[in-house]
Image (cartoon, rainbow, N blue to C red; front, side, top):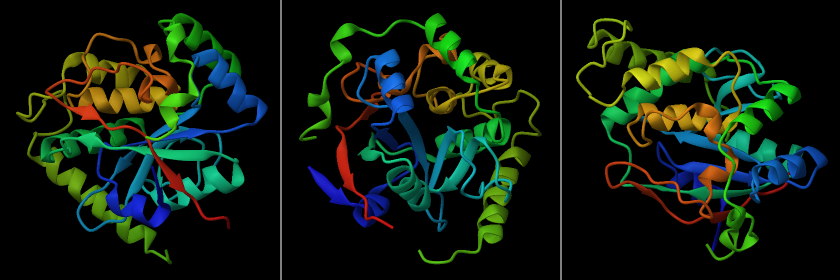
Length: 259
């Protein structure tokens, strides 16, 4: 199954995943190291009337970060459409959408904003750090290396206006929690481990960002270190058990137009 980028952006909701596969030497190295056909993962953030955003980590700084309004490397919040086009046309990646079911609720969206506030701007690890963290993480199952799981399954915007609305929404949630001092605001979704994982990440790569965010949303069990996760954990060839009856749909290939 494949859909156009316009259709994918229209379908995307908070918590949906975008996975990418490239053919460059670094892309192949990541796929080989993580024993999966994908090398990058990002999470959609879709709030109110704002355009869909992509929450991920990357080395590049070609797009403005929608949280800070600046160009930066590392953990970033991008316009989703622009981010997908950059990964497709500049980095030579193919992209797939995996939808979260049931959709994220309000408490989950507030947890996403708190995580963005904590992690945005965190540097991307060096190659040596990345290799060491993968080595320390749990080794993937050999059966995961199969491409079958990926088969069959604009305009100008006021960026400062988008940023202000993100901050306004985040501040509203924080005010109801009496500040960001460890109080979960009654949601019962963010535990000590999730906060510690977010706070302990001096550097972060894409899978760690998604994992910590999913953990904050109450979708992943606490107790695992972020480096247990790699991009391959988030494609359908891996058994990623989500909590609360949630699950991720199969990959939907997205047709991305050239620029």
